[in-house]
Image 1 (cartoon, rainbow, N blue to C red):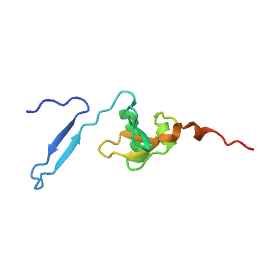
Image 2: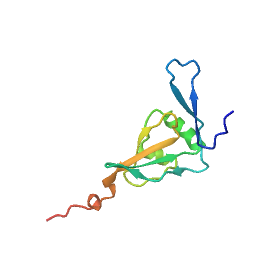
Image 3: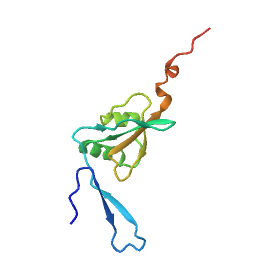
Image 4: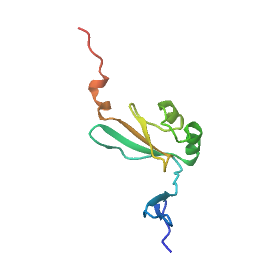
Length: 120
């Protein structure tokens, strides 16, 4: 018998009778009591973060999109998710649709983007 899994851990399941030895990852969803925001991380173009919804919010997400499409700004804000200017829901991770993936261009905080052109 294997040791019990802690919250948020994934269990690797090998399908019996699989000729290819293909493995499937089966994860038990972990729902927080309050919305959880990851630390921000980035590459050379975007800043990213992920947001883990509560079970109730995940159910509302399912009613809105059935986990099949990206949410518009007003939709994710309507769920209670907070984010500054430029954040966009950019991908769906099907095994965990209650985890929203966000990104925004790195230059969104560039003060030159917020300045108005001066007239001469």
